[in-house]
Amino acid sequence: MRLLIALLAAAAVSAASSHKEGALRFLARPEGEDAYNRQLLELAAIPSVSALPENHGDLLAAAGWLQRRLEAAGLENVRILPTEGPRPVVYADYLHAPPGAPTALIYAHFDVQPAADTAPLWASPPFQPEVRSGRFWGRGVSDDKGSGVLPPIQALEAILKGGGGGGGSGGPPALPINVKLMLEGEEEVGSPHLEPFLAKYKDLLAADFVLSADGGQIAEDQPGLTLGLRGALALEVELITAQTDVHSGMAGGAIQNPARALAQLLSTMWHPGNSSVAIPGFYDRVRPITDADRDDIIAYNFDEEQQLLGPLGASEAFGEEGYTSLERLWHRPTLEVVGMGSGFQGEGVKTIVPHRAFAKLAARLVPDQTPNEIEALIEAHVAAHLPRACNASIKLLGFKAHPYSQPKDTMPNRAAAKVLTELMGNPPKYTRSGATIPALAAFQQHLAASTTVFAFGLPDSNLHAPNENFPLSMYRLARRAWVELLFELGQQAASGGQGGGDRSEL
Ligand SMILES: *[C@@H]1O[C@H](CO)[C@@H](O)[C@H](O)[C@H]1NC(C)=O
Ligand SMILES: *[C@@H]1O[C@H](CO)[C@@H](O)[C@H](O)[C@H]1NC(C)=O
Image (cartoon, rainbow, N blue to C red; front, side):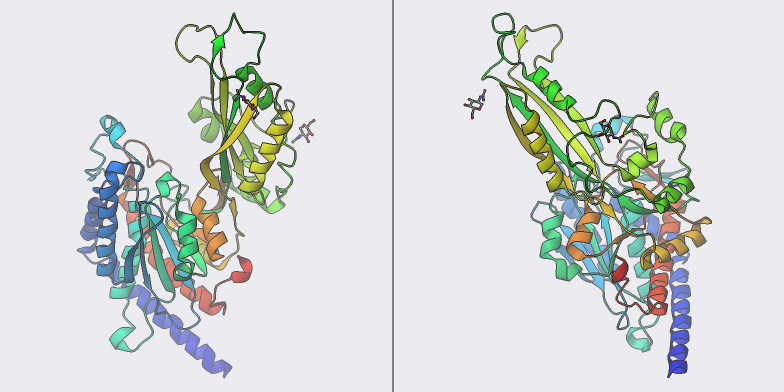
C-alpha cells in the first residue's frame, strides 16, 4: 500500500513537472511577449483612479476589461461584485484541483493613484503608457497593474491552456491547487469597504492562505518576504475654549488659550527624556523583540545614512530610546502628531486669542495592540490631562487597521522563498514594514488566512509619484515566478500531506 502511494505520488510529481514545462512553453511562445506587453499598455491606459469621483466610470471600465481578460484566460465564475462603496471587486476562480489540495486566494488591486495633478512632471502622459529604454512608463504600470494584477492571470492562463491535463485528456488537472482571485478597486484610498466585503463574502473567498500580488521586492536580484506590517489609528483632538476668537488685548490673560492648552496636553503624551509614549498602557500588549527578529534585522543590513537620513536630508535618527531605527520601524509602535492648527495662519499678526485648536494624531500599531484599545487609552489620557477651562472632543479620522504579523515558516512562505531564490539568484531577506496594508490583517481576521506577499514592485519605480515605471524584465520574471509558485505550492502541499494548508502555522 505504501509503495502504491509512493508510486502514485511520484507519478503525480512527474505529471506536474510536465504540466509546468507546458505552461512555461506557453509563456515563451514567440507571440506571447507582445501580447503580454499590449495587455499592460491597454489596462494602464484606463485611468482607474479611486480617489476621484470623475474617474468612477474608468474604474468600472477597468473592472470590465479584467472580467473579459479573466474569461479569456480560462478562469471561471468571473464576476464583478459590489461593495458597500462605489468601487466593485472583480472575482474569479478555478477550483478543479485534486481532492485535498489547498485553496489560494490571490489578491491585487486595479485602482491607481491620481496623476493628472502632476502631469507636467511626467516625461510622457501618465495615462498614455509606453515602453522606453526597457521599461513601461505610466500610472499603474507597476502599482499594481504590471507588478501585481496581470502576472498571476497570465500564469494561470499559461497553466490552463499550455499545461495540458484535465478536461478531455483524462489526466489530473494541470493546476495543482485551487485558486480564487480577488481584485480590489479601492486599495489606494485605504480599502474603506474591504472589511464588510470580506465579512459578507467570506464563504466565497474562503482559502487556506492568501497570496498578495501587491507589494514588492528589495531589488531585481534581491527578493524579500514581508512578515509583518504595522496597524494604524488616526484621530483628531479638538479643544474649544469660547464661542469665537476674541481680542487679545481685551480678553488675553483673562481666559484660557486653546493653542497653549493643546501644547500642554500634547507634551504629556511623550516622556521628554527618552521619546517613548507616556500614555499609560500604550505598550502593555507590545511583544518583546526576539532573537529571531534581531537576526532578520542584521541580515537586512540596513544602512541608516543611505536608506533613511541621506534621502531626507535629516541630521540624525530620532525616536524611542534604546532601540535602533529598524527596531523602531518594524517592531515598536508610534504616536505622532500629523497635523495641528489654531489661531491666525495668515501673514503678519492678528491680535486675537483663538477659541479652538486641534491636533491630528496617528498611531502605528504592532502586535498585539488593537486600534480600539489604543483609541480608548488616548481618550482616557486626554480626559485625565485636559487643561482647565477647555472642552475637548475626539473624532476618528477613518484610518484604522490592525497590525499584521505571521511566522516565517509557513508552507506558502517556504514555497515562495524557494521560487524567488531560484529565479532571482539570492535567498529572500525577511522584512517587516512600518507602513500599513489594511487588507492583510483583514484577511487574517475574516478569513483566518495568512498572507504571503508575492509581488514584484521595485523601490525605484516611482510608485505614487510622477514617471511611474516598471522594467520589462521584471514583468517577464513575475509571470514566470507565478507559474513556478503555483506548482511549488502544489508540490509542497502534496509532499507535506497538508492538503488543507498549514492552518496550525497560521
Ligand atoms: C463646554 O462644555 C460645557 C458643558 O457641556 C458647556 O456648557 C459649554 O458651553 C462648553 N463651552 C464651549 C465654549 O463650547
Ligand atoms: C522613558 O522614561 C520613562 C520615565 O522616566 C520611563 O517610565 C520609561 O520606562 C522610559 N522608557 C524607555 C524606553 O526608556
